[in-house]
Image (cartoon, rainbow, N blue to C red; front, side, top):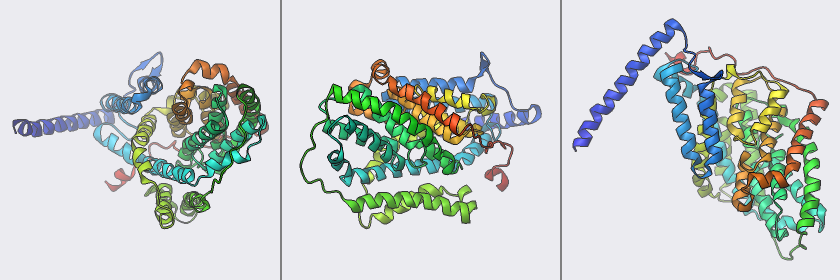
Length: 452
């Protein structure tokens, strides 16, 4: 009881102190302008804290959620006490910033959980189990399997596509070559790079206002890259461990459940198109795409019950990703190098080491990119090392022997070569097609400010 009696006034005192500090800081900032903050070697401290968070995620795979939340807390604390937020200093600045980001974050939350349910629908349809029957019994079988992963990833989440490829590979090969595992991850990331429903990064672009056709030309690079890595890795896998003859048996596909998958995807696209064409104001008020996906899941439950347990088990991973996206939204993007094809190419290599989701969030905050080229760079670039993308982490959980950056690079160097060739194929055919920064006006009043 004593602790309870003491805690309330102490908590109130802390809140009052923070509010007092916030007010003092607000009046100071209003008179003298926003604080520049600290920097090391010319790099703002926010970026250093963010980089440390991403490095921690790369090194401590079993503590990614803790690392991400700790990094977010550190960045918020620094901005609260030192620099202030985009929308202003102190508690009001933080509140307005989170209000400004609410639609993006809630859309992403609903979509990631919804796509987890959608992926399970596809797995439960038994379609992945029937796939080995159509694979050729030679090296072309390995290439065809990578092609299937590529196609599946264009309409299904790239993590699910990689996992399906890993399951099928285990069925048709006695031993799966590490280089071929890198090929599965690369195929899933390449296939999702030109589709707004095929990869978390492109879905983020879509939510943020990037039109689906504006990322579609990523397939020029992705298709070129696929030819570079898929054919040699298919041949090497056949030499390493030949494909097995097809198993006989009745693999009855639940086509109704496959239809449910299509219905959910069409609903997501339809909700976004309808809102953009007829009710654009709704996009600033509600997470339209995410709500459309969950409305379709609930309607489709009449004919095929969804596995909602998959969504609940994905909550922690989703909150981890949202923490990284929030970190990225707090960065002083005006101090980043200007958007260019050189920057996009570099981001692809960086995404091999750091998670591509926060890198995409940074690019969206900055704006001015060729979104198709960026989608290919951050999506496919993460395939070069096993922990560079969520698909790589998922495959490595299936095949623990792949959790070696050295062996991944040694046997899967074809992926790095394919990334470079694909990028320059796109650059020299369609060129750099940047879009105007769509978040440049930070000074615009927020919805909360307008209410005041």
